[in-house]
Image (cartoon, rainbow, N blue to C red):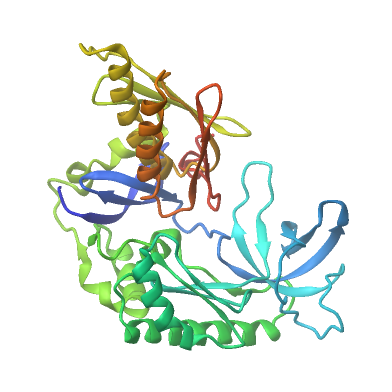
Length: 400
């Protein structure tokens, strides 16, 4: 369906087990996928009363326990004022201290979850933070829009919280920002006050499930519909939208047709298979091989079945440009993160190399997660980094 942006939530079997699948479609193609086992509770975004287990000064870090046996990594390089549940004479962390921490990154393979004392409360337009008491504006906004939002948001600053203006705030009016800030401020104060009176390992704030929390970040100017074919999920989504994003509540629809099914109309099974498959075919007949390793992800571009009749270098450029567009999409679809190395087909001309890099940079800018095009090495390998917060789609489905 050629609509701007559609967000789907449904129950679907993956690897023989029923999962809650959320998918965001742009221009008729799946751009993002997320897999959540029904009833499973994610740690990401949750706020706990944690206890400092030990301090590792050699790596400038601490390990904080947030539940019996769950140790989390905490960077001592953090700047800010930790919120301790008991009075302390100094803000320096010590074993046995109890403080409020938020899970900022899930456990990935052998790495423990990461926590921060800089608590964030995200809305659709703004993020309220207890860390830096400053104003930050999304770098993805145009300069003139950044300046407009800066003028609107600066009066909101106080000595208590910092504010980050999100990309979604583009074209938002002052009343919308003020209303959301009021909701987030109340939530933050309530969480801090609750945490002050909770025992160690208490869960003070639970982040909504991923399939609901994602709604806060979807581009408002692109999102046209929110669909589900599950009655319980419909009720949950409706309650979330009415409470947190009333302006988007009318976009939610219940898909009640049995034929064709939601899967048939939007090709959910096909999107899942694609996100789990090592090989991705391009329209030109070329293909990508995507191979995650322990340290990084390698993407290899191949000419495959391409039967071009132009000069060889023009042929290679055509495949590389198509591969660049598909690479950017696959990073989002599979939620790949960390270091990504792309081995494009060799281009002899520096002009063609620059054309490829400029095109790839433009495609990566569409990614809502911070993604950086680093450089092309002397060997012609392209380096990309993508911020890591959640598990990859393969890890979510348990296929690795």
